[in-house]
Length: 306
Length: 259
Image 1 (cartoon, rainbow over the protein chains, first blue to last red):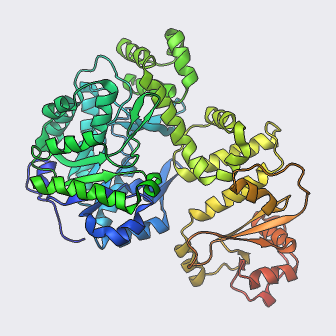
Image 2 (image 1 turned 90 degrees about the vertical axis):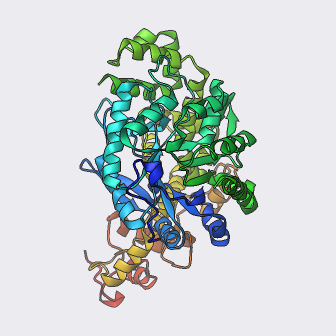
Image 3 (image 1 turned 90 degrees about the horizontal axis):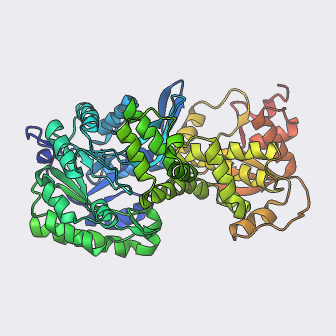
């Protein structure tokens, strides 16, 4: 798509977005659905990292694109707006930051003209005692301390400068409570957004999972968050494991997530998109009908408040 | 540096339920290796006692086993009840790389080392692993780019077509692979023989990889070329070139069997 959806004169990222509407996070089960039901979506969110492999050679990372996947993306890009939702910035890693990865994202922004970019308030890259980076195995939360705020803010500013697109940071899901944190999660997100001008991707299912696992009222979180900064909302389903509720993207969004969407949409004036996320292994269970139902319900909520 | 050390300790704990148990029992000794502040020490001491730490450890394991199970399902089936033990030992021996292909290659290399060192024994494991790993290699190759490159500039010397692989079996592949596909272990004591499967990703019309038996003479020859062991007899080479399994600029009749 060649039409820009960014207002470059607005003061912060969420205000610079022009509304797209309802989207779905791309997964390997979706090409067939998108061939028949593209009209159900206003945009598609893609995880760029899924479309390439990383090889480290002589200390430098080489990105090898997965040909068949990229062909699908090329096809989508010609038909519908795309937003990028990366998983590899690892903004919270204290020991290292991969500027080469940012350059790879920047090259893909050039190529695909993603409407905006988002990543997570967590870290996935860790440096071992031998000095090599490796994957932590899951997105690990950061303590909401001023030291971490300084660290993450510097990286966000760097990313915004290199990508030259509105950048949104997503609230994390976490399974352990780190004691004695200097800020709450909303305070941290608000401070980060205030300092850097970035926007917030409010994952309502992450919020719901955290509220269930850590026994707090999600409405308190929403009340504390600067909703003016929210540029995108994620909705999804989850599942139980060992007494904890997981953000496993297991099928349809539960009712409390829809209720939260109804609370947030009228109060978050700059939301440009609501994205439904599901894991491809649940497509056989949900079927195209199930995905369509989620998108239509999200659209009904969107139409009510937009 | 302290925050980095805190993060390293937290990740080490997530990767090891055993370390979490040690940290609960004796945090002073377990966390002594990390250069962390008193507050960070207190935080780690608190989180290892939370139920959510068990969730973190489980998710770490699920995230690491998923690529292996999705790419090497028959190998995992063959390992059966021993899979968890084997995979735990692999995790203890290797840092994680959640790039699917790399993680699978790391695991395959590690499995082969176990077989070679007699730390693992299974009559079918090596051939099933080689078969699935060959398929994995082809699956991630840029097929259109390779086809285009071959059309524009075929190799000067005969070489295996980059979009084919051959997998050698010491047992009839069907008697090994079919039960595994049905989630059954192949029967013990299958007759020993020389068998080859061709894995073929040359075709634009085929979304995935076409697998067909290859007669022993051709399988042996193709494998020998691929491994750089020796050059096959002219007749076998000509047949491989004729079938498009070996590619070169020259016509089959003019290819020298000397290397």
